[in-house]
Length: 135
Image 1 (cartoon, rainbow, N blue to C red):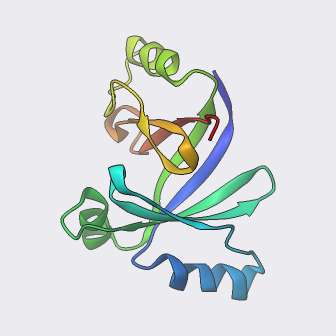
Image 2: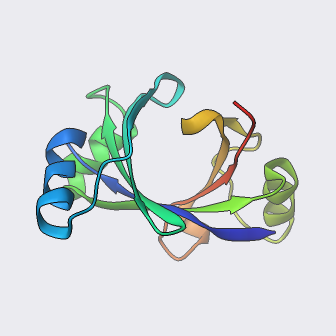
């Protein structure tokens, strides 16, 4: 079901400021910035080969992501896997014992569908599944 690692998300306070580090130190370029209103975040994607680093900034100071940064500081937030059929993947993983945050997919960045698996069932790693869609 899993096709590849789509991205590794890094929680940041400021996407543009964080992107400056990746450009200055690693020579990597920010591929674009997008606000995902339904999730209350601003994301910047940095392509690296067939995957990306996703810099994710909270738009709401009361959001879960803002609280994550407040508790743990900036850093790795989640890993995201691309799947062909997100609804089927969520259902399958649930029957196999995964605790889902999302029972049904929701809209994510790049017009994709996404769903999250709770870190309590994945060894402490917040896990996102994504299914690209036609824009």
